[in-house]
Length: 162
Ligand code: THU
Image (tube, rainbow, N blue to C red; front, side):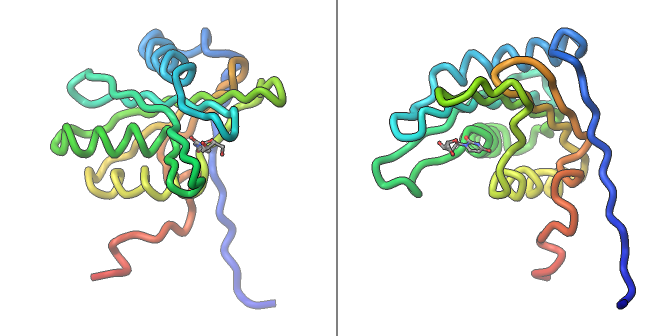
């Protein structure tokens, strides 16, 4: 066998959002509100993301679909690109994500997709500090990682470009 390294990650779990701090409860409730306004005529799967900036402001976003399917955008990137555009010098502390569709109850935490992980990782690298990620389904259990990189080991980054 060749040499190997083992990669481990720590994911924290909360029975429900009420077990989280009041700051996180507020952030997740903003994610839920925006989730319910997502534009999802094709998937009927609604996702909301709320981002807490260092200055205390909260930026929210939902998934925006398109008849040309790949032209749509996930909630997390809608929110984080807006934060990056409007508040380029504010560090992102936390992102809370919630997702729910019509085909099942979605009571288990729904993690961000790979493309969103990559996008969030970019901002961690840019600001040189971790972004805490909370994710939930429609309601119920909540998972949390202390840094996006916990969800994206061996991440590609600018380090490989220059
Ligand atoms: N979606 C998100 O908004 N975030 C994710 O991390 C996963 C998927 C959206 C994209 C599409 O509008 C719908 O969920 C189904 O994939």
